[in-house]
Image 1 (cartoon, helix red, strand yellow):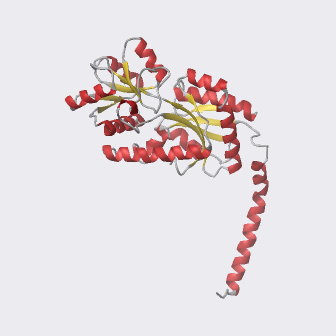
Image 2 (image 1 turned 180 degrees about the vertical axis):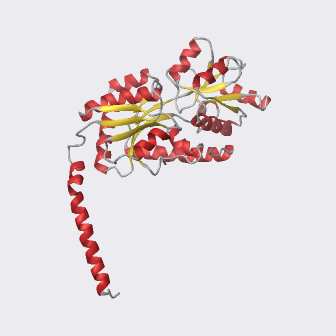
Image 3 (image 1 turned 90 degrees about the horizontal axis):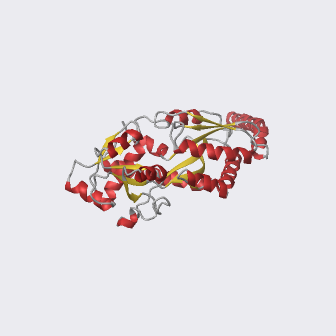
Length: 331
């Protein structure tokens, strides 16, 4: 191919511009590949209200992460919009490692439930580490005659349209619809503005099931307000060692745990991600952190960025299939 003088001039000029641009960014690149990151306060946004399990785990984690990185970490709660308000703030922040997102697994499911949901969990963020998980349990009303998942399934089949689960979030809806699809149950959804409202109706016998973390469920069971029918995760819960998992009750392959994870804005340098990843692994592997998380009903994880990315992709694929099968569309 013959290159004309004008094209050669354009190519030369372009090369000069690119070289100049690369030279201009060298100091910044050098900064993020050195041991100097971080040098100032990090802001960690939690897109959920204060006081819940996710907020508790974020504060436990950030405190130890701050010690490891030797800089202050400020945790800010920005709830609302199915986690979109806080997440959008992080997505728009400079990708320099000084503004991070600490979300729950419901963030990945949100685009399937909320029309026009922004930001995009897959396209707008860099996964850093899966920090902790919760092995939630299926809580049943005392109005149910039996004490197992199969009793609830049979009840829903014998009384179609009359057996209900309470859902205070889209993520809860997807878990129960997945349960319906796997077991053949016909448990109907009733939406609630809050978890306490769903619990009030469960205790009152107006609904039949909710999903709850093991610590909170244990308190209600001890008070005689409800019973645990199954464990949603792949292993039994320490709080309910005698309650089998969904898989153990005849539905192999079912295993759902909710999680909390750390994200950075898209475009954050690899060196920053690696530094945060290394710090997260170190912090979450200590016996002290494992004990603190367990006291809150959580399992300390601390995964690699690649491992977290795989979890996000697996969840997105699963919930897409569940939503399609249940006829759920963004609203």
